Length: 348
Image (tube, rainbow, N blue to C red):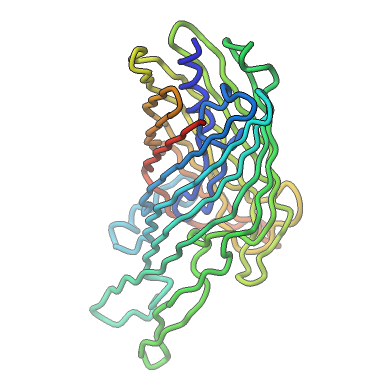
């Protein structure tokens, strides 16, 4: 039973939210804050982890309706992201652990409207790129298992709290190609789009939960979720909103090859940001929305090491209306069809 729970807890504590194209959901870790089998960390143990994510977003939605003409007309906005999240966890007791997470990313965004726009010279269709790279907003979190994990092979729940610090550059700038009134090109240096900014300039506080339940031999239920409160309303340097974020996952794992400690998983996940924050104001530019995905995965867990590969595939993409002083206003956003996530953890 213990080897199955190592696989379960490794899966359920995997990082569950991150940028989904134009919806700028930044990476967060759930509950214990690390992608690991931390339910079986003894007091005094450490664990290091690394998560890699890659996505390519290009499909535009208004609400849940895909704007297929954007791809057909080659006017879509394309976001490519390569990101890492490095974690270090310390088990203060068998039930209490503390984690620090450091995200890093490289982002590339190409578009038409942000550059020449409607002033494009006849016969041309230029697509220019802007980029960002570096450290994002770091996080410190603590998690506490309600029952001693060593005494709860059938099921358990952990609750956690965390703090997000504004360590990422929230005013990354790059060159934009513009046309003057005489249709001559000039370069304007300004802030890149909110979806590829490294940080949001605000402190955040999160509440987190995770748990598992044994259903029958080799099959188990897992779930986790978080909500990040962002009291700061506005990044004044860019006039971008500092939004709340949320994410949740639920699914099943099955011990496919028990002797090799290999399991497969299938679940659903939800991630996004709201139009209105729970605390503080909601002014500034933001693209609220959410993504619902089916998430298949495969997990291997050894004595000290664990590896997870998952490929969530979007089944619902919803760019919800943006709140403004005069009411809610519709807008569009680009989403990915799927993303690739790989996580490795080592405990010592």
